[in-house]
Length: 148
Ligand SMILES: [Zn+2]
Image 1 (cartoon, rainbow, N blue to C red):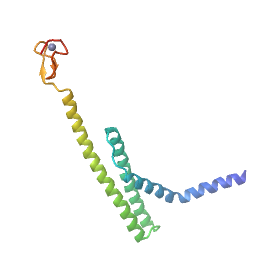
Image 2 (tube, rainbow, N blue to C red; image 1 turned 120 degrees about the vertical axis):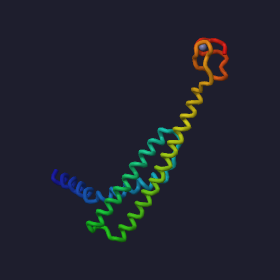
Image 3 (cartoon, helix red, strand yellow; image 1 turned 180 degrees about the horizontal axis):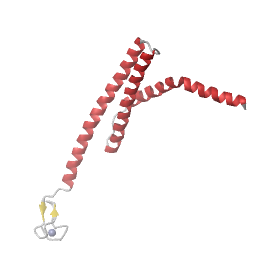
Image 4 (cartoon, rainbow, N blue to C red; image 1 turned 90 degrees about the horizontal axis):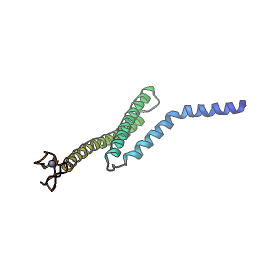
């Protein structure tokens, strides 16, 4: 029992000590994988991607802040700092560009959808009998049945 408890504490300590490296590794990996991801059509997917990009941007900013902290606390050399910071800044830049593109794309999509909706609901004329809406190619009023 004592041996088991000692073993468990050992694992916890090891994870605790290695955590900054584990964290950096996981975050770096995630950013690297997602940057290559290109957009798919559909406004829902786009919203999700945009949210994902926002959190990636925040993660990159946090990573840079952590690097600055490491530099100040002396755990990181100037050379390593410059290199890592350059990497994260390049990632952040590319994420920001993607966010820009997505936001523009989302705006265009919603404009197009709006125009399609207007066309679908297109009111070309009104019924002379009841004043109801009708489309140009309608032969009879959908509301009162009067011929148009
Ligand atoms: Zn009518």
